[in-house]
Picture: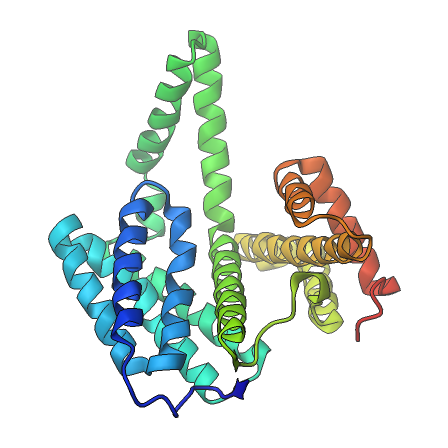
Length: 313
């Protein structure tokens, strides 16, 4: 097994591997137009190949993919893909090749991913004024109202539904920053673990995050976040509406950390007691979709910060 940040011993170019990377990228891009979730598979392929072949060859492959996407799907779509994944892959390769710590790598790559999304927002003129404009709100509520209308709701129900849709949309805008941060963290973690496991199966080892059942957030981060939420909540009127929005986003991040901590504990004991992988992921999926289970899992995550069920330091 080779223990290298980047394998510098490979002299010959694996053209078959780069071609597979090219074709898989095009397939994912085509499917991603309908099911964007598939893009979560996109960056890890490039990170794996960058360790094996070097970042120059991999970035050349990405540029070739982007050029073909521009021809097939349009230049706007190609720009979006390159802006989101280009810097993300570059910083991932740099952090791995310089053997940076897992926490530093996830922090840096998440920040780059988040920044790339914000750059796209500003490049396409998407800002708070546009998102909060009456035209945008009417478009959003109109879309969901038409869906509800096709479902056969009465005129009174449609009116109530439109009002509810507007309220939920405005609430979503308030927590949008924390949602984007969470998405960036999740994509960084999945990319890192997927690339690390793939390389390990090929006999190459890189520093990588622990498995989900052994994942644990530093207690200090959670305690500091909770204390900040408490202080801002008590002094919210003094700081104004901006502090309230900041508190709301910070609370959302705390809920996320507690939920992940709880899921880690649940998966740890499912693995310990020999649950099949399919059943484990089924139960995790239920925890993600059922609100009562989400609360239960967050409580487990909060208790784990005190009791330390898994005895992880």
